[in-house]
Amino acid sequence: GMHTVGKLMKVFVTRRIPQEGMKILSAAGVCEVSLWDSEEPVPRTELLKGVQGAQGLLCLLSDKIDTEVLDAAGPNLKVISTLSVGFDHLDLDEIKKRGIRVGYTPDVLTDATAELTVALLLSTARRLPEGVEEVKNGGWSSWKPLWLCGYGLSGSTVGIIGLGRIGMAIAKRLMPFGVKRLLYSGRTAKAYAAEVNGEFVPLDTLLSESDFIIVSCSLTPETQGLCDKAFFSKMKNTAVFVNSSRGAVVNQEDLYQALKNGQIAAAGLDVTTPEPLPTNHPLLTLKNCVVLPHIGSATYSTRGIMSDLAARNLLGGLQGTDMPSELKF
Ligand code: NDP
Ligand code: DGY
Image 1 (cartoon, rainbow, N blue to C red):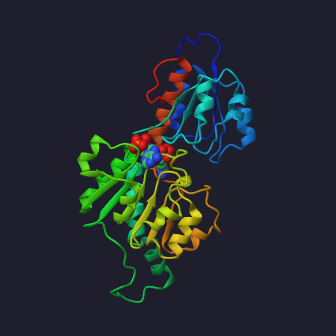
Image 2: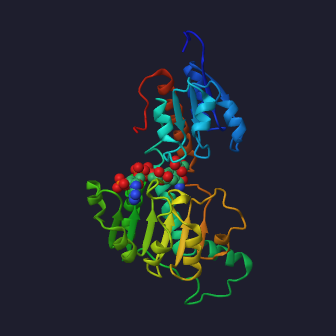
Image 3: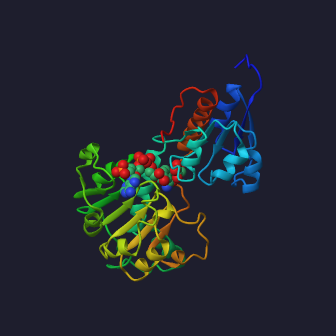
């Protein structure tokens, strides 16, 4: 604003972010932004330096915000605004202890992420990357009755683990493909599941009855490693597994074995551990595993809106006013 009274508040932004957010921060005239001006993550040592004395921190999911970072920031830190809906990279216990507010970006990325998850499911089930490869490498000799066959959604049972904002948006998009039953599991049944005729079932029921299993829950101590050997062994051999939540929900060694041994048909992953997945990772040797580089929310429009929201969350926290999307924890 025109009448900036007193000193500007110090803010550290850990990456080059879409201009929507930067414009909002400069127009507000209340903060002095220090930016890690790169497409690549801020190195840990630079993060620890950059946050020193900051009142606000705008971070990404690749920045682990723990005791060390909070200590480096010091007592002035009022607000952490993350450019993500996931907040498993934030040590909420430590953040709460220090009375720091947190902003995140729910809802605005739901459609983009659900759309990408459906794209990944179809690509995996209908083997699109394999097909594209065969066209290029001369493997396409003729139309063959059983070549590159996969699995379709029509008449199928879909199981969604974590029917939250994104899970529900995925369900709504899949139903028009002729899905017969929509099962979901989680901590609690959801009234809104009625919109997709969703049946709340125990995880074991979901695993044994689903033709497609989609993981869209948040990463928590409870969901970490949830998809392990026992999990995959309960799935149908013809079932397709899709994860667009966080890589750590999956035990990747167990997934590799399940795919290799034909315990399950195929897997599509938008998220892995670590990220990036090393190019020599065993999962990348499998034709029935489709791995994407964490692009769920990656549309130009969505990323712009996320940036805008993250900036406004940051300003609310700095000024002690409402934040458009404050995490209550
Ligand atoms: P929500 O909070 O709306 O949904 C999370 C769901 O997880 C809730 O419905 C919750 O169900 C469920 N859940 C929590 N604990 C468990 C559990 N123990 N078992 C099963 N389900 C559980 O979040 P969003 O839908 O907005 O986002 C979900 C996640 O998707 C984010 O946390 C993020 O990690 C990931 N994400 C990934 C993106 C990508 O690019 N691939 C993009 C955006 C988000 P209940 O209440 O019943 O426990
Ligand atoms: C999130 O927001 O948590 C995603 O992983 C990236 O959009």
